[in-house]
Length: 250
Image (cartoon, rainbow, N blue to C red; front, side):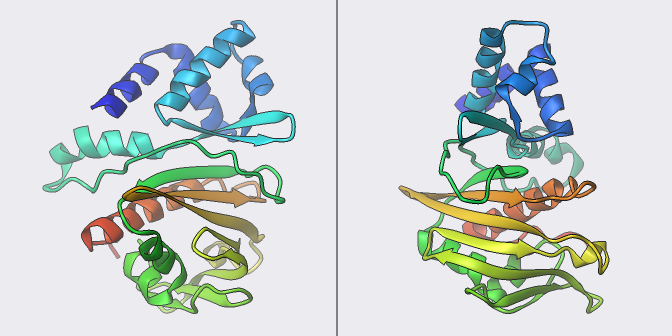
């Protein structure tokens, strides 16, 4: 219950809720950016951010001299699954364990979006789920068909039930079992939708693996990708831990 207690404590303050609202509107803000929005000292803002980080409601990333803050929506989904969903559906969704402790530098600059989750599985199992087309098709929340394993230079396409391609990705870099860098071409937004880039980071920690998702170069209007990542992460976690994916109603 410690994580849930931290979550309720973090939300029980208007200043912290204002910080979360600000990050929801514009992710990846520095301390100076957030300080300008609250009528309190820099130290006061830092204390509130520490509470939010301890509750896993924000994820931080250092880039040069600055530390950027990102909204991590998965704990809120966990709270809804635990306290709300049982009253709305016969069965609650699988809960997501969370952790925020990543300061790994990349040469891609500051990500526009970050998300982290813990999955109780082996490093090999998570790697296979992120790279093998048949497994991606098994847990993707909208697609039942995926063409092309993830390997350097290879194209991976996610196919909707109507046969149309929804998403196209090209694997650019791979560090075996730890990192995958890919393009993200949202064909569901039309043929001229701008492409972006994403990275999976895998860090084994005992009986679980911490998966971090980073998304770079998102164009205006693509903020909704965050909900898609939350759905994908929840379905992937359920698939690996229980054998059952969280598919959306088709």
